[in-house]
Image (cartoon, rainbow, N blue to C red):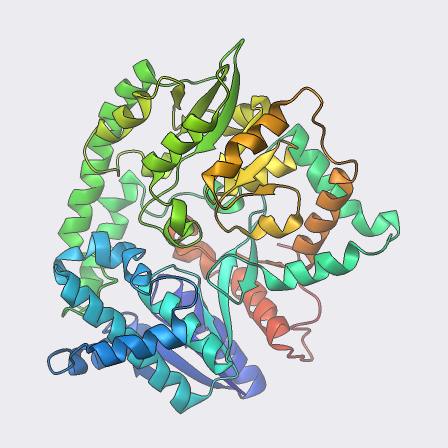
Length: 501
């Protein structure tokens, strides 16, 4: 068996450890895709076949020309769902963090087409049985999964699942559709299982409604906190960039400029201090009294969750305006900023002024209790957001426009146009409206499917940091989860029974 790995983003040390265990246990051939000098120091002396995406891009860059013929071929192969330029537009590295490396649209187009060329040649040459990426929504991962799907490669994105304890899920697409979960859910919907089979799911829902808890990854210590940026992380990345050679050349577009990153984070800290005063005077901290409202959470941007999962509704100001236009006269819209995005929007207060100028819209403080606003809302309107899942658990009406893993639960209103919104809101806000009688039964079965098809483990380096990710327990958990996903079995139980984290 051949298993491919993306050894590019910050979860790479974890995936190297997992790949090494798989190679030792099963004598599997490991094929890794790297970028420039990133993690080269960890990959030395590993018995892996390595292919360097950065070297390919550097070699091809000067003489490669984008032609209309090539663009038409790519459109025919991969353009059924959306414009292919969206892959580069949704990448925060090429559009924000390292935008100076690709300052023109022509250079971004060349980068896009060369990624397709690389991944087509890679999968044609190595014929991987499985390929694993850690779910970072950047240009290479988005294009690699599109190419893999066309070539029949069993590609898996490893995501952090939205539970209050650390769990991971393997997804076969970049639209947040959890196929294995959905298949099991469809099966369990058709029969009445013994109540004890769903005990854990019922307890989870009951406990969440009594004490809502954020997903585990949003409770973890932030990898780039203000304390670590100027101390531990600064000096570690100083070595990576100036000793190990990360970020050299145009085509390592993942590694942020060291001092640019420090400057960016310092600017964010200062902007947040100012915005705290702004939000204190201009935003709600608690749900409004004596008025009905609809709740809408903002999202981080650029980000695939917004720009790809909700591609046609990704202009968030326009999205808010259209929702506000659809509300009844006696209902207001409460819009909450994403805590991480505070201080990261362009400008200072202009973005929020554009929201506040709407007479039926109120701004909600980023640090306000999201769950209190969900509980008291008449409905929750989202593009694509974890808040939609939390609202379903808290039994509030959810209206979704973008893609999200919980859309398949059939417990929400999935709309494609704003012309449907006013009618849907009128229906929900009617005194006669009620939740379907089988709502809790369906929710229980969906949570059951989620629990059965996700696995214990930490996967997000940004939130957890390398020490937690590389703990012996976590490496073993991810190793077992991946072995299970590949259908592997061994004497030590990998792929059979997973230790509860």
